[in-house]
Length: 84
Image (cartoon, rainbow, N blue to C red; front, side, top):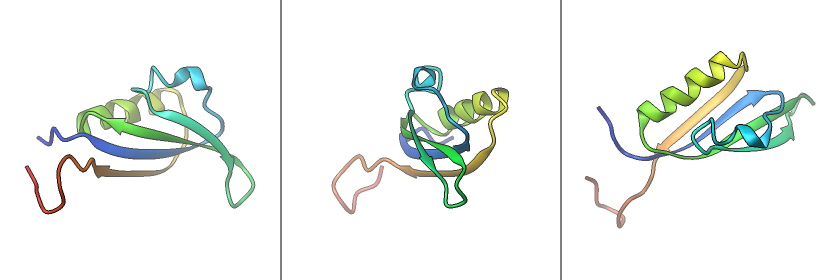
């Protein structure tokens, strides 16, 4: 199981209120218009690991939000060329 912190951005349809950030593991909402002109929210930040990402996605599912995209990458925790 991968326990590395990850930087992620989850894009959902509609607007997510800022006070939901705490419930979404601290991911920060940022509203914008999509290329098609609809409201979307980017939820961005660092999560503890893949399990935390799964938890956030489960909460988004329970809120009946439509996920448009998910991007995630390990947080660089050391000098270039090193890997734990």
